Image: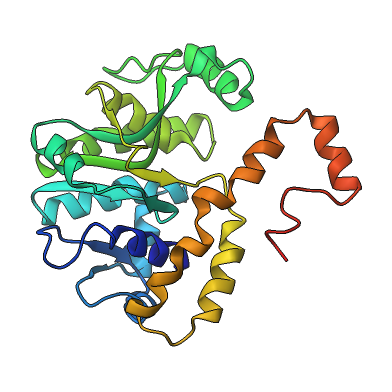
Length: 273
């Protein structure tokens, strides 16, 4: 929930109630969010029963996203830019809406062709699985380009994409139970449309779960303050900056990482104080 609030706060530097852009949050906890966010944010209320149904017969958590986007785009015609909660806006998204209006689809960024990622064990295993995988009327290539699905932009006229994504996703997950099968299915169909990468506009910190601890402390310190007050301090805990020590640490050889942990010089020592 705090991630969503921070993302909206970063967006508010570029978008407000006068921008002509409607901002929606799909949530099962509108009460919590509305207490922290400005009044111009709109909500799509989701029930526990709905979320459970969207997980499908295999109880697959990440199946919720394509179901939600199919639902939302069926009820809200226009140009849609979906973002995960763990995102920060770096620039105005208005140019992205212009690209979507022109017919483009948008995703966060390409993570490369999976058969070329020799140092990425998940991609190696996925490529091996896809070599022997088949699905009616779809050639899901073992050397496909994987796109990060934390951001997806499309016009609602393309909502039938999700009618195609969901059956493929269900079949993939039934045969290879990995949490990222949703991303494989989305990358397959969106990839056919030559997505536009938007990482210059939105920073997606999917690999920085430690930031949740920082957010909790931030909102504890700003408890009871209206949005107009606490939003002024968001740059003090920018995940764009705070993640840098982690990224540098992960570039080190494994033995150096372990040594630093032993001698108390792990990258997160200062972050988590």
